[in-house]
Length: 268
Image (tube, rainbow, N blue to C red; front, side):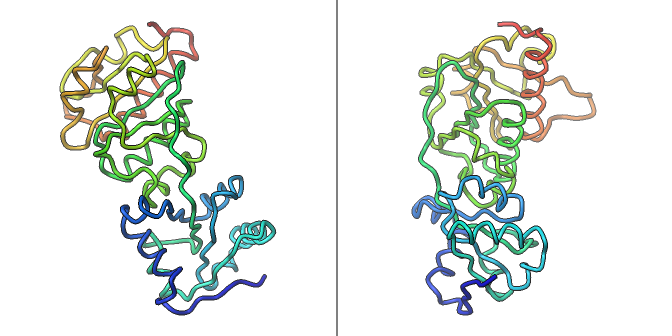
């Protein structure tokens, strides 16, 4: 295989990639992001229109999985750029990398859909949590995701890595207010709140279209979200545990919804 090779950190492509790796603002401005790792590189083969180029750490092509992936990108006429280890490290969004990063175009914003389930993230600022929730959402069958303006940027490299490809199967709307999503979807607004609410397992809910709201790591859901809530739910925890990480709590709620529907015990 023959690759393009860049050896200068001053190259415009490297400067851009480094900016994308380090600053979410750059990703928003440029409409570009970086997807790191073998799993995402393989997943993006199904979405080649999103891939601008592939960066490869020198020597990583010796990995059998990476070699197979590179051959497919080259057959699609997508540039593969080989970099010395030091330069590759400067553009990699993670400390420990498999040696392959795709520079991708960020898709257009999603659309508000009726008659489908939704998740709204209310100020979730940790990229790992945002990505994990996207992954859990897809696994539980919910593919519509909306985020408040206070959330971590959903297309940042760290969120992409944590979501492990879920982005490419979801309808995502960023920087939108909960009131707009609730009004236009007509869904029942279920707010998960560790501070109080009805028992997640005892209360009757989940048959109709739902709009789940999960709040920020430190403050929980906002007062606005509580005002818009149709039902506030609490995960009953052992008394020795005060609360769950927001991504864990979201997974518990979403899979309880899935369990109810699959078993036919969901209620309006």
